[in-house]
Image 1 (cartoon, one colour):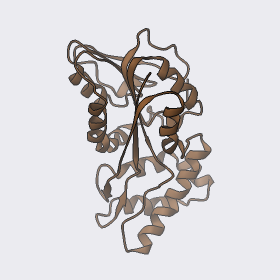
Image 2 (image 1 turned 60 degrees about the horizontal axis):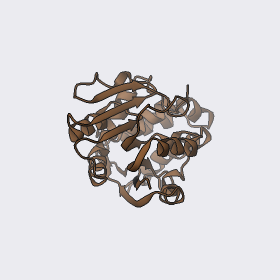
Image 3 (image 1 turned 180 degrees about the horizontal axis):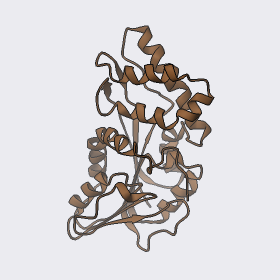
Length: 260
């Protein structure tokens, strides 16, 4: 089974899903612009808590179908819409579904996979001619910048966040992947390649800023090995609850292409 840095089996995954829901409206807009319509067959890869899959099911209606897959789908509620199917599936190693799709969407999946180029080829093969592929990834080349005049806030955030990014990269996360996606789509022959980037300001104490806290907690071991002290982690967590602290989110790069 493929191993992800942030294991969905961890109880903190629920907090991560709630934080990432801040990007749902932008994802909905990108998918709507991709043309998702009644009757389409869609595949949501790495379904997380199932929210995007349920939204897709509402768009395609009873005449369409949505397959939501995840390596650990226990966070996804039982399918409650016509044509919605939830399945345990490893996109790296398992056989492709026995159908092809009008749309395939994956958010924050391939960036974690050392075999991401091979997985991209597999997803392309699972598209109908004229089908749309939508990949959404964080651009980690542009890490969050604290919006504060307090140098102590900046130092407290960077003391944990900078080694956290290094820990991610040492575990196979590709910080350059999002930025390379447009050229990667073009090189694979996708047509009408479109790019949207979304970022927002996160305030201390908000639901979305908790993404930084749970990431640091799940990587506490590697951070300690890198010299991050328990005091630095405690100060980081306290800063994330301070309503006077704000920080830009990671830019979410959304790339859409049409299979020739």
